[in-house]
Image 1: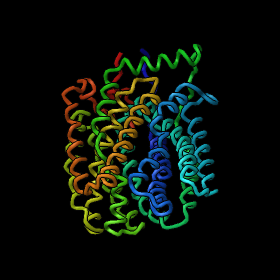
Image 2: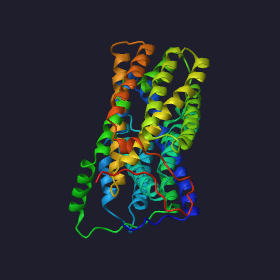
Image 3: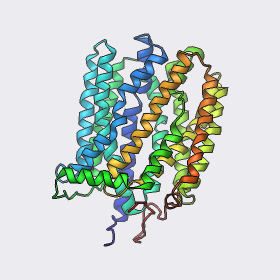
Image 4: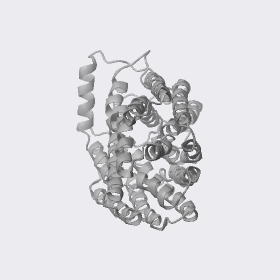
Length: 425
């Protein structure tokens, strides 16, 4: 087997910076509409949590079928590129439908449909960036570091999203859609500066390629385990939407105050995500999974003391910190378990499973509070206890996957050493 041609150290550094910038822009546009949209449905259409959660779930449903978009990105090229081309197309497509929301037809179906199509564009961006991260990170031995940065940004972007979402929620909803459109266009521009490589299209045609990709995924024991582990660590009655209603209706927090405590949540997530950059070089995936799962379950219990703005300001950073740990663990597990050649499809399938289970959990938790009138603190206890169930997967984790950790610093030296990327042959 020929040696993998590494990118130059300065190229790795530049691309890492640009990739992290793309994630910031991507998640800023994707996350910032959640609070304004939830409160818009609640206060403009006078809906309760049990009705808001399903609408939010449907609006973002495209992220539950991400493998479709990833398959397109993995299989078809435009101008010789996969990741670059589909990021541009997705960014522009998403911008069009978020701008269409400015028409403002007073019907929940209009908002859900337009956001769904706008999120389709964001899905193309997400799948392309995810596939690029796995492909680029594996090639240069920095997948664990990039996954940690991705996890840090996924949580830490709330430092920007929180105050901005609180500001937008108190104003005309059209400002929110404009920000989402601008971020989508930003992703389309940033990708041009990343070190993407041209893809050689198979002469066999698309059908044999798709069949080969699916066989590669289905034959991987590590990949099947990663899917199961993702389900176990996220299957719980969530309290995302119930928390928003609890904050506004019970604690009487303003939109800006809700946004500000979300910022503190992001700060905690950023700290944990950055800490995981170092931890991935010292801890194997198995140990990281164990530690972050226990921390999540224990840290979540703090939300039982969520009684006012002061306590929220202390608890939210804790919540962000422990949630970021399990997020990073899932990202790293998904990246290392994904077979080579199907990075976009394989990685996005695990992320789709993660998003689907989280969405179902949020609707589950919303129903418990709005229909069965479960107190918020009891919902937190159930969420915490269910998270611990993920530990039952550890004894069954494949040894080859359990023992993986990064072996190269970022940026890499001229060494040809590679990270321990697992592919079942």
